[in-house]
Length: 311
Image 1 (cartoon, one colour):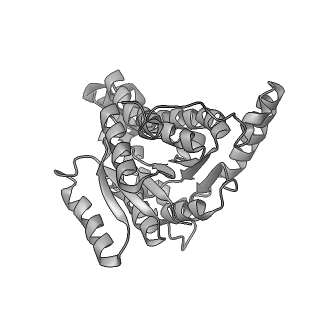
Image 2 (image 1 turned 120 degrees about the horizontal axis):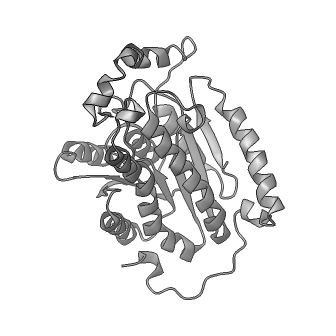
Image 3 (image 1 turned 90 degrees about the vertical axis):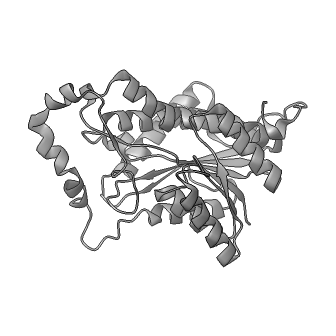
């Protein structure tokens, strides 16, 4: 069954690949990005050309995850054009590379605003509609970095860990209104995205110079990452897009809470399983075991313009 899907950060990388893969699978895809009429105009047009050429229902919508108004407007556009919204793929994100001390508080605040608060803005825009329908899927593109915690990516790791925690606690609550959650955890990729080429560096150059003795390690980080892949592995982010397609094709109620797409063999699956058991035991001991399962809350009362979200 085809779904209406909104993808954030679909201009490049995993988001772009996912938009293409979902459209090819027959879904109605609203690929969102910033500045559709400006710097991303060519990328937007490439997606629209693909849709016309292949007869796919692939559309482009303006969405800046750093803006509440933009998130609300994007969701309103999706609902106006498609009449419903079945799934959101939270993919928009940015990368910082450098030494933690050299990042100013403003640097880290900006990254958290994109990678963590951006998710909250979009969820607040879509959840009134999903709650009113008592169905929907929130699919997060997380990261194995929140488990393995690699060096020289401190603010990024912190932002992805915070986003993961927010997704988990949100899942307890929205699950009672029939809304499913899946967190996809990609491992590192050294090709197929603009994550590393577009990464920002720390804002304090003087503090960065103080760590010059470690510069050689940072310089070989990409090579070191590639050394983790087994021989012959096709470590390309299209594997993440394929996993999203697989997940959305599963019947409602059967999607896993977490799934890992990792060619570095970091052992994240085993950590996730230990964490899952500990969390389930704790929540059950609290007496909130029903929150571990989707469904269960009474139907909400009338909500004016619930499909559109708050104005």
